[in-house]
Image 1: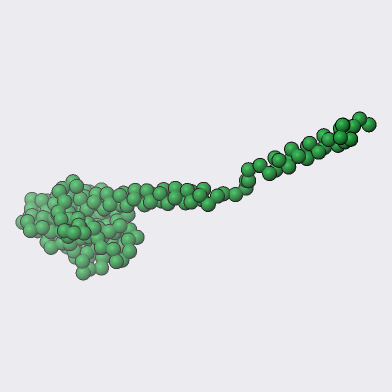
Image 2: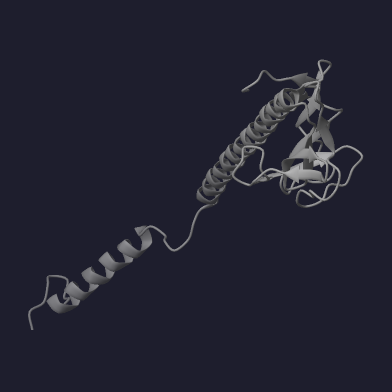
Length: 204
């Protein structure tokens, strides 16, 4: 059998060389199968940022929805008072936690407007109504007396209607309301943490 100068056979030399190469590869092979602490912290930070952005976006959408519904109600209330002045008859506002509707005073009582009428019953989406000092029914009750009136003079009776997000905690104060102003007309007001309630211009 051929041997090297040192007396080692060639097959044995080849086997020794392969073992040395395998040992060096295992010693310098990068570790795998797990994440480092830095990688985990980076992932957690990214997820936290995404959640924060989503919460801010949803809060903005809720705020815009509240303002839109408050402005719509105020506009309808102004139209109802104009209609009352033109017709010389009272118009009532039947308020509920999930919506509202208008009715016309008749000899038989309060007659609600048809659903397809602009003063017809309206159901709110994502918004809850609150009336100070009063527990509102879930849906407008046209059998009961209205909670607010438009007089034939075109004036609105005293009203302080709050608009709150669905699911808001009981201790969270309303940020938007429709209130009867000094001119006996409905106005949308927004709560400022420093200045209190301030009037919004019509349409935002």
